[in-house]
Image 1: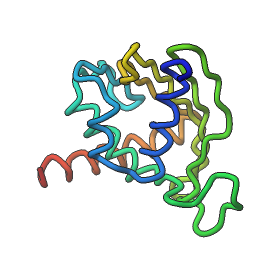
Image 2: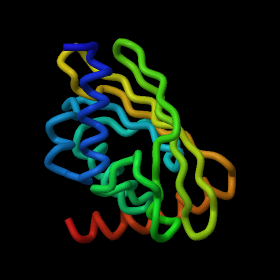
Image 3: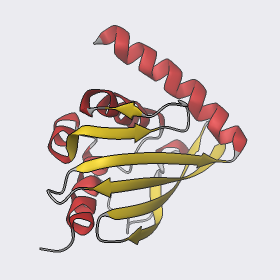
Image 4: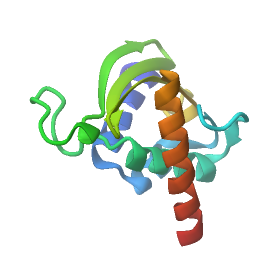
Length: 150
């Protein structure tokens, strides 16, 4: 088996493709820390991290079952894709691109795994400012709806 990051990254890509809340339970450490570009304090624990990631899956729709090597088709807002990956032993930085309401969103997911292959730290950074503002507004609405529904 490769490093925790290599194995963890494979699991992460499966979660992103399938947008699975149950799969998040499998890959997130109980004490994971999530750092969002739309909240100024780190969020601690699996439950709150799952909430933010599931909201992000809805605000920044993933590739679904479509393989990344296939041509991207359909509406621009369904074109979330990772465009670059830098992987170490326990860490990975994944650059992504997507479009939300006509605004290009460029960001990075910085992920750290423990020796057991569980995500222990997940940080998201987004640019440009207009994209942060759009994602902030949509994430706020999505989280409010999820909290009321749950």
